[in-house]
Amino acid sequence: MAKHDYPFSLITEASVDLAEDDEILNLMIAVNFSGVFLGIETPDADSVALTKKFQNTGNSLVESVQKINRIGLRFMADFIMGFDGEKPGAGDRIIDFVEATAIPFAMFGMLQALPNTALWDRLKKEGRLLQEQDKTTGNQMNLTNFITTRPMKEFAKEYIR
Image (cartoon, rainbow, N blue to C red; front, side):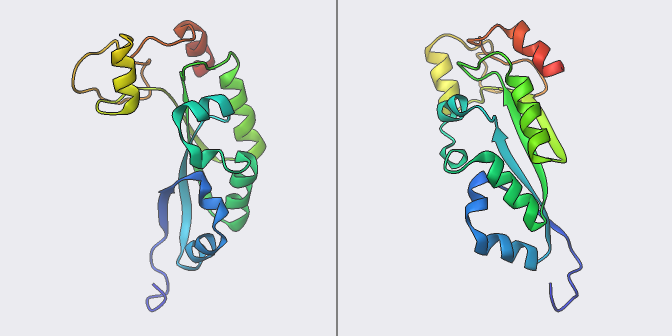
């Protein structure tokens, strides 16, 4: 890259704990990374614990996002609604988080249980899957493909808002 005057701008996907590694962050800037996509999923600690995305629980999500922003990487993030035990107002909490952290590109989706995942297996065992096929599109812009613990109508309204 240096030999050719950095002709490419690079973007990657990473986990939130990227913010904990100053060396990698500095190297990313040095080799012309311009952006990073992170699957934050939700700022709700209880829902994050349920997903077992422990890489999102080590440090403050707000501080981690702000650190990645400060270093100069364009931040893109994915948020999901429909987790078991999700409390009313999840959509507003996601919006508040995006605004507080100045995330310029945020995507919202509804949780989908994908085949051959722990979530799929658990929901199948509980008889909560709405789609018993071996294949699903995984389209997170659709309603969930399982019976949620929170009324679908309630969080679908939040999602639309």
